[in-house]
Length: 316
Image (cartoon, rainbow, N blue to C red; front, side, top):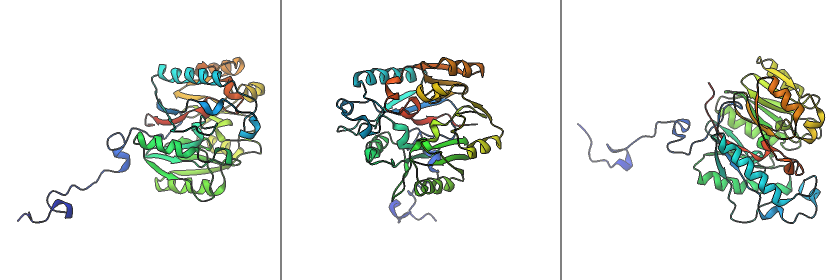
């Protein structure tokens, strides 16, 4: 006999149990998002177009930049970067702060680390960037993207210090921009997803893992010799990666030739003005699309730093 006396709110016949996992709800209940590789086709990115915060920077060093910026030129170059993504079929979303933000908000990659189930919100390591995560969190919520964890306590972590080297394996770096406490919090969340986390340490003077190691395809990494952590090289070689080492120190240091974003297998968007490195990539079978971002190099960042990755196609 069916019980019709109990209301649905208390588990009666109309009760509808939620049996799908969060991952299964992505794209339906939640906004489309998710990353489990560094090389599968790019679907969506989050950018911040620099605004009034760059108009009057009297002392670049005080805001952790290297030289004075031409604010108008940064905006023009940022617009060209966004258009390059659109031309490649990538959806572009913007952080849209309700107030003038700190000057480094444009480097969105540092503020998020995307997983297959949503984002880990970073906690920048310097007081200059403290609070930038508030603006990104607000925009992620508007896009319906789950925020799985916000690094807390005295932990610091910037998203450019993590990389998916396999669908169930993340390389996680500590150093100036990510301390042990922050890395432990990120590791804890990833382990709940049954993701293996490999910890490495960055050398003195390195900001992020992103600046020393990038991925152009499944099993193909590009590294900066003398700066990439040895533990990272060993981990990749142990997983049958081919590792190519940059051919030109000058283009790596001054042209940010390694600071590219992978659009898909052996397709990258890289900074213009690095002919030696571009030829090196092309000889390896990598198709290179270029865009001018040299004004951002004065702010100690490049294409990868400017780009928050929201979604890639699922890795096979």
